[in-house]
Image 1 (cartoon, rainbow, N blue to C red):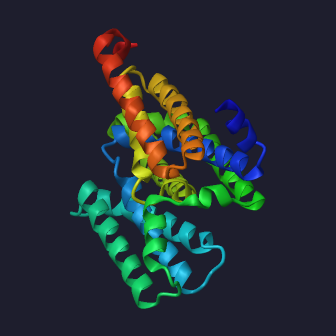
Image 2: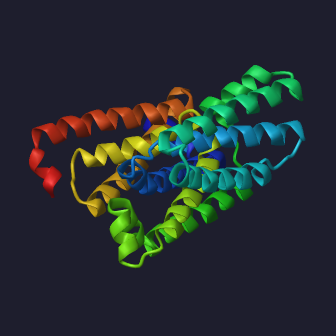
Length: 282
């Protein structure tokens, strides 16, 4: 098996997939802790369905680089979702459900009415559940992912204290002079960037797993925000790497394999947390 893995690693497309997969997992885990604590875990699910609608539009107009449509549409939706969930009668989960279902339905409707593919079912399935496109990344696409991932990590580290404050007590943060709306907007834009990056890795229906599972796993072991964030990042990177390796060696779907490893890691952390409850206060 080691010889087989060493042979695969000689190919650039395998190395590209590992680099992109690890970077996406890292970025997802950092923001996942914040989203889980703010009870906004499924914003990733809603935005991923918006991204699906953007991909549908890009495919209909035969746009070679669908990110030109998907990225701005997803970022705008993240901003609208944040404001809709905070300032109207349509709160949090209801706003996410409304945008999520609407974007998914319109995206599939557009792809059916203006279909330009002879294999519509295959295209839809690969978009929803991920495909082998993670193994066909170009050198340019890898660098785009690296730049965007570095930007997300840098923003998170730079504004860590502000993100921490609006995560735990937004009212107190406002009273202390923090512009909570600005940092909530920053969080929404960063998660939108991650969603766009993760579409090729796990598909639009499985993206939430990258955001939720590492954070929940880390929370079974630790209690402080900093330790949970660090543990979540480490777990997410390990699971993404293991999932990609298993997928390459076993020929299983990339996205589903990574999520399965995340679920297994959560089970291990849950059992460990139950047996060693003292860690949760550390």
